[in-house]
Length: 497
Length: 99
Image (cartoon, rainbow over all chains, first blue to last red; front, top):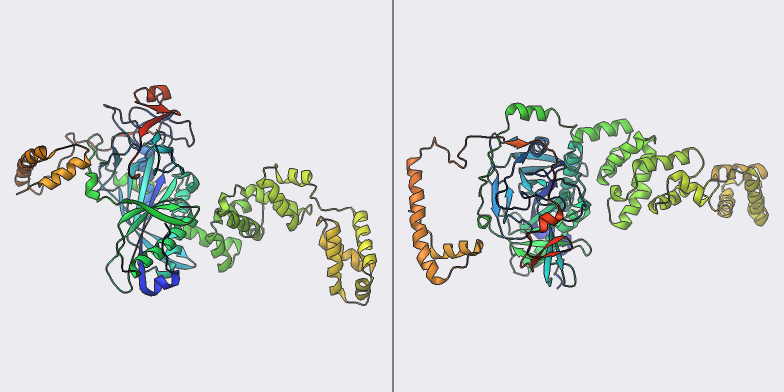
């Protein structure tokens, strides 16, 4: 079944989008939210479980102090108010990912509320208001067996691993984001990107979208242009890359518009995001909140963070990412455009670390926004997800600076790094990439090129130095690119003077 | 006067996965209404200065340090499972979607 879509520009001619983003952040605590089980990613199934996170009768939860601390720090960094008193609540539902038949969460008393984040979209600041950030626990992981696609549909039975059940989560919910218009997909992406940067700066999570430690749900609705009534929304779940956040917003806008244009109405439902095809498909009808029959968790006493504690935590907040960007821009001497591209590519940290490892700002920018960005784009991943480290980039640049390779050869060194062939130095040696500094060999190649192109040589002798380019090209080709083009030019001019 | 309708009881029973037949619904709906009424009468006694109580003990901030403690072995964890496959709990086919 293929959805009918309306071209993006046509959507905007008729409708205003409203978005709401729910971002789940898995905290990097050593132990779980309510028990002492470890939280390592990728452990053997059901090796990090105990009576509490398995929901066995009689087990009693106790709150992890570090998780509360992280929740408060996230809230403060998002300019939220911190509740003086709040409770956990049970969200009741029957689904085997929570063996207790409820998820311990917070309902009408979130620990953080009423905040905002100023999001930079192409140099324009857009304020995203934060409704709340609350504490809850992650669920177990189901694998569906049988059926063609590994999805629920058509499966015979499911297998559940509870290692993830009970890992602390902070769910950050925005207020409806209105007025973004054509920039809605960019605002959504920039918000999640900036939130991720903040989470990284706070060091409260691994912040790995590819491992699910940050997961976004994208709510979207359209209303007729100028109307102040919000339309019916859909919630696209588990959008797990920045690029997908942008694409999911764009797709749902186009899909909603087609349904509404055709005189239909949007069904309030969850949607599945398909990373491979970039489309959403229908999930389940959205339950009313009251169907979860939330009630205060009787096994956990209220959390009442003292104002002293909150202020003490405020003192631990890292530099605001926007202030940091301004500081770095000045120190690196980047133009506004260069800085915007750097931030847009999510390469700020990578460039900072590359500079720390010894590169100049412009050299670091050249690789992260050039060759590496190109490869990331080809692979459909973020540049920081390529698996190339700032230290490696700095090492490649150091080889260029030292004259043993040039930028063109450096690309082959990156090929080697992707293929896991060792350090940049080892790759240069193993692949024989080093620039030939043997003057004899170079001189021979130049002589051969001159002999093969007497007419070009004549022009150069007559003072038409621009013609040297053709000979340089020939020599570089003969040397398989492994020569210093500047030196080749010098030799040609010497010989033909 | 709080009253719970037969339809609401049927809906709640469904949410709680309690299988009630028509006769049981007819029987239970009025009873639940009476219970709700009795509970609601407490609201009449409590003044605005008395907050709703969810915990009997006046304690807050009972925390544990973020320290890893020993877990169950997978054998122990799975020992009560009706069915096990690939060191995971095997559950019947799931209808509907994840939460």
